[in-house]
Length: 290
Ligand code: GLP
Image (cartoon, rainbow, N blue to C red; front, top):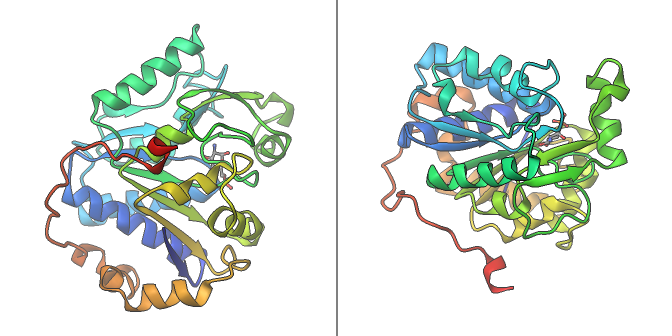
């Protein structure tokens, strides 16, 4: 795991958007896993800006979102389909037919979950999975005691998650109590994971997720199994970490971060030679051996 700490939320967001942009420029057919939540709004705004100002091209990529509320059709203003259309998809040149979310209004939810997993596999798997973290420590909606081997399925939302997300609904008690979410194992199968957390209210759960013991009580701890996971934080979200000096030294000294150290002007200069072996291949995670 790599942990990058930036001075503020804007710089952390900018770095995440630039990592995504670099991956997309390297491979225009990138399969991108996307997340929702307040934190991601700024990431999508930055990607839209890169599309408009720098011609960042989404025309050949595919996207898969982590989750969707059960019972909300895509037309509902609180659905994640609505969120994605308005924050990103309708503002860039992505082909909407290549954008995928679980259908929360599906008549047969179980069949919908299986269809979603199949579709991800048919696209060759997810290359880059963007992630936020909920106050319950969840990835997607993998609430406490989610199996670390779980696949896309239905989950009942925890009280912490309900309290965090209900204010986004009017009235708040209209928030569905169930969601379809990619499983922890589905997320770990992505070739690269990129998690962004900002703000002091995330500091405690971020420290437990990164430096604490792996536990199904906090699904984000499963990222410790991932062979290529980058966590980007602002100072506030990094406030409870023990090894901050170590993380800072790596960011300031390691060559792979060189072009990211000087703020956002370098986004067009981030290009590095195409890595050989970027072809689709299955990453066997440590979980295979468990
Ligand atoms: C929701 C999403 C998560 C996201 C979380 C964080 O619960 N299902 O994928 O990580 O929100 O939200 P915020 O950025 O608003 O803190």
